[in-house]
Length: 273
Image 1: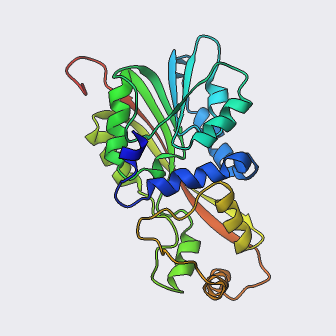
Image 2: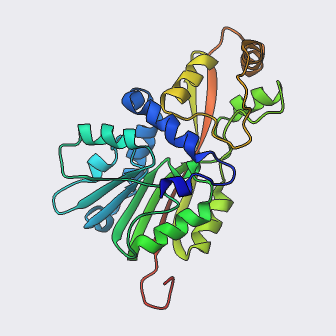
Image 3: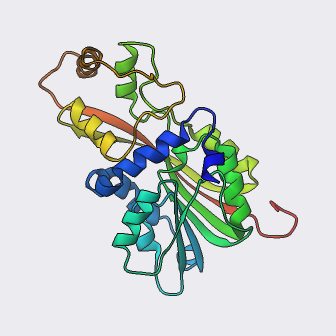
């Protein structure tokens, strides 16, 4: 199934899988923001969804969130595109989590199976948002909850703007915003129970530290129209100078736009079926 899925417009799924596979062994050393957002997302769980019997962690990575979702009488499945991530998750797991390698746009599960689908900072790597939400709708039980976080278009705007002042290539991933996500929720027949947006600003010693972090979590440029040749040191140097905007001795700031949402599959045989 994976080979059939690695063809989505706008994103290179093969590169996504390879990038996260390479990052898997040291992912947790760099993924501070991912854990911070995951902790925030977990706080949105109500008691009814937290005690659900069947939970899918969609894009589980090394299993940080699923280990907190797992509890007695709860059946948790970790799904990730990169097999190496699931190997790391299994090595850290002390409970009976189940592991499936698969694509969020082609979920290998039967209809109306899960009480809760949980997804932390994953759907921004999907080429077809409408298909992701349609697949989640398909596998949720009536009344089931989809709780997700994703990055919005303001993410890494400083890095993107610095590159644009150097050349016209696509060097930074572009992410969908709130309107596109709301449209996908509605188009899938899910009930929108709230979508929130927040801007997070993180300070780094320099641009190279930011780039090392992005590499460490596997967040490479995966756009299909990305430059295919190696970027020379001269261009990187000019980009860094543009990012610093004439202040070489100051720390730099990077913006991350966080979008957090909760939606539900409608109850009843004639609504959202």
